[in-house]
Image (cartoon, rainbow, N blue to C red):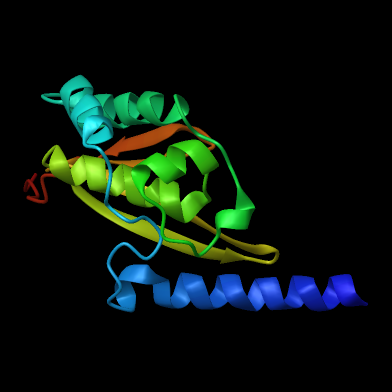
Length: 156
């Protein structure tokens, strides 16, 4: 009975977080405090600069894999980059890390949160001018290109 109550409360918590999200509440850095020694940003920026959207996505994924550690006990905590590397985090921390780096590299980025029957999940979507990639810390990026379709018709 207690496990059911805890699961229900967690679901409600995830649902509220996915609905409001840190940025929607106006609390920048709610899940990831942007304070570090600078080495993380510089390292990722140097390694991933001047690349296509897809190349950047895989480059950022490889950088994240160097320190990725899932730690649910840090849910809702504002973490510095150094704390994230040392203590680990959850999907919100990592999607914010992706977006911060992608924006620094000149891409558009949005964190997308979804609710599931057993909680929620957050990913980052980065985009260039005609393509986008979905970055999830648990799998390789998925990228798509937006092809403009010529909408003129020919008369036969």
